[in-house]
Image 1 (cartoon, rainbow, N blue to C red):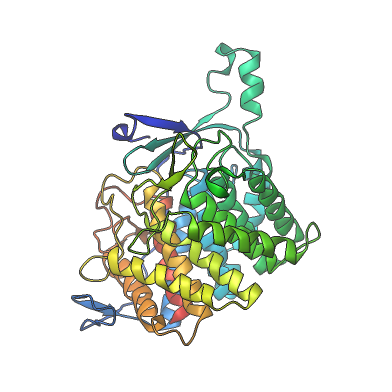
Image 2 (cartoon, rainbow, N blue to C red; image 1 turned 180 degrees about the vertical axis):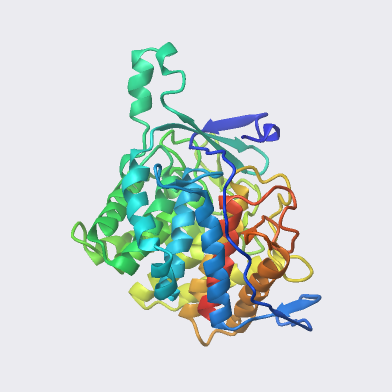
Length: 441
């Protein structure tokens, strides 16, 4: 459940939490990786590095990790046990990204059926959502309570309110949650061309758009309570708009989404959330006089990630290559300042203080660095970022994996049970870097 250390002086907000032990008969892969001497392409002392395997080996390793992840899948809910609502969107995202690069293996694992089942079943979820933010870092702890739990004692008006907080259409009270689901359904659409998946992403975006106003000069709020403007909700808004501009369906034109994305990036870039190190802090402090400044909260890895994919999509739409340069500055800062001496990505809350949300973060960065590397063949820092992805994928498989069942933990340099036992969030996050290695190997 929720780590009590995050429940002190905090501001509240809401979501869903599943707690169940997985059952998996997954067998470990027999694939072996080769040890070699370190690379120092990013100027870091990388220590002993496990050099990249070939694309086929990465694909097979990822397929084994998929089987382990699906040990937590609940067909009745369309979600993954041991993790929460927004994390489930990221579980689906990594499965759809895997499908993008190895359709044959994906089909053999039945992932199209997983997407279809989640599309139907997850919308029927009924839960109260609660999110609690640690005021000094911005770390959020998400929890979910079934609507029927204690409903009889709370009165009819409470029941009506609670029913309105279900997640039909993948819409709830938190714009960041919505953005994760929109991106997952966009990727599913890329694979299967199901118009319903693109349609629902467009619907989600329209709800996100309603969260915008002129406070701090623009951007959208974190939640429908309108009490915080932060990096992740606004980066997701950018990424969804830019992605839809390249895949516009029947609701709006490509230019509609493009213009919103262009405006959103201009606002984000000038918002003050990017610090002197070219990293995004968590969000903005809104002062009594209406001015807004960087709140100095933690530079989480996922706050350096989503923006990269958004900029790649926007550059694809507009042809503006300066957006790729902007993305490389952020990505280079992240892999320089947020890694161990061996070049392995590390969240500041590791190993044991990341709550239910933090274990998901690193995979988001790896996923979006993958998009950046694939989008710019000639950039001076491309080789460094590619090496970063391969190095981290190798470390995950060699050091952060339970060989008995291929479950992956939160600490990518290992061991797999450092801080906490593996769960669907740690699994799907680590899988993001495995998929990235498949793509760039």
